[in-house]
Every structure is written in C-alpha cells, then in structure tokens.
Length: 135
Ligand code: DAT
Ligand code: MG
Image (cartoon, rainbow, N blue to C red; front, side, top):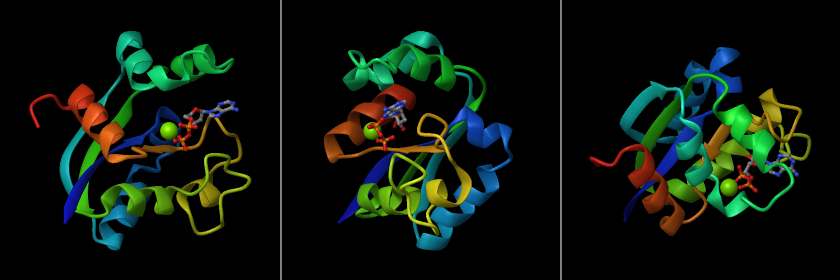
C-alpha cells in the first residue's frame, strides 16, 4: 500500500547545497515526488509544525533555526514511505546516525540535522495538510 510523507530539507541543508543530494537519495530509493516548494516559513507555521516540542527547552531555538532561511518542502510517496525516509535520514542526533544515512554523512549537531521526515501516518497527514493544504 502506498503512503505519503512530508520531507523538509531544512535551511542548513539548502544553505549547504544539499538539496540535490537529498532528492537524489530518496529518488534512488524509489520514493516518488508528489510536491516540492522552496519557501521561508512564517513563525506561526514553524510553531504548528513543531507543536509536539512546544514545552521543550530547545523549542525557541528550533523555531529560529527552521525559519532562518529558505527550506525545501517535499511530499514523497511509496510503499512505507514514512519509515523508508526515516531510515534514509538516520537518527535525530547526527553523531549517532549511522554513516550512509543523510544525517550520518552530512551533519554533526542535533539541531542542524539537514532533514525532517514525518514519523507516523497521523503526523504525515497533519504535516502535509499544514504545508500543502491543496493535496
Ligand atoms: P526528528 O527530527 O528525528 O523527528 P524530533 O522530532 O525528536 O526528531 O525533534 C525535532 C527536531 O528538534 C530535531 O530534528 C532536532 C531538534 N532537536 C531534537 N532534540 C533536540 C535537542 N535535545 N536539542 C536541540 N535540538 C533538538
Ligand atoms: Mg520528529
């Protein structure tokens, strides 16, 4: 059964020229792009996107970071797309992420970890609705 996931190449990834690398990896895996748009997030959208982390000490810094420059928002689909992209991304902490994963290969700091991928079908539906309400 096909599934959709929201993927972000975060502002650090765009600034470092890693858009092609991320898109290339997900396409090589077999995921299919459904939507793509470069945009700079308003604070309100960022706060909604990361609402589950609103009480965390790093929330303000996370919102500053994700709104700090253009990001690439993507929707991709395929069988088990959510889990498939999370596996390509690697662990949240890039130092713990396995080499061969996007975070494991390109990042060192937990906040600046290059990509976001939805973590469940419920999150994917909510996040796709937030970024691409027409889908
Ligand atoms: P993921 O992005 O792997 O789903 P998450 O949902 O737990 O991870 O956290 C969202 C983002 O918040 C994560 O990509 C980077 C940032 N973050 C998480 N834990 C953090 C921490 N302890 N300090 C700073 N930033 C953190
Ligand atoms: Mg998450």
